[in-house]
Length: 236
Image (tube, rainbow, N blue to C red; front, side):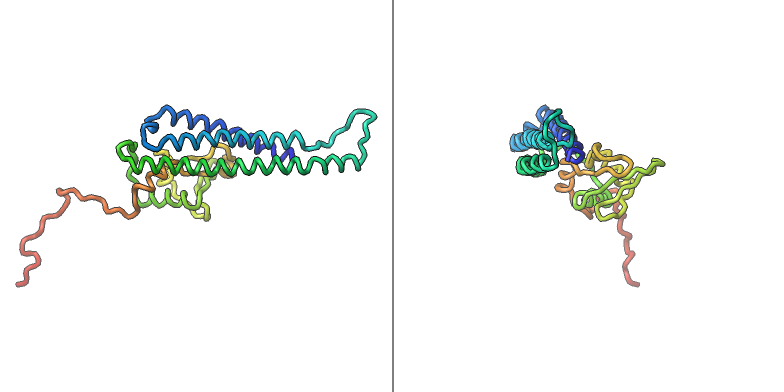
């Protein structure tokens, strides 16, 4: 249990730190002037609180977990005693783990609500909308695929990189780099760079998906329209 919970506690604590940074950025940004932004900020604040509770409950489970080590001299340490200690701790550990799972699920729901809320607020109030890139059909398709099934960024030991969506299909480097450049997606820094790193769509990326549509007809400037040929279709 110690080996299993240790990395998870560190991951949750990292989530708390990253969420605090994003909350601070939003709190000092122009987004606070957008109608409805208070709800998103309050929901993101709940992520900080719930993640902290989850980390605390996981740490409590580590502390309550009976470790196999020698007791003080003269203290009974028979197999029956060890079994009794394990039996006594089982319901306590189960309660701590159940509480942690509940609060982590709440974190996921709040993160999704925050991202959706930011996209909704900016969509409903275009006067506050930041400047967004106009994606090509290939770039839009790549972004939509990442939003639907997720993706992973792979780096081999020879520094060769590749990106595959959740179905195992390759996402070409050119549209992927455009999405990364415009911060429509992000690569999770908390995962292994050699094996794979999870790719997430940002709130900015979801906003682009909401306001742009695939297969858009590009406007044609008047100077690019060829002049009709007089008599070109006239029958002789």
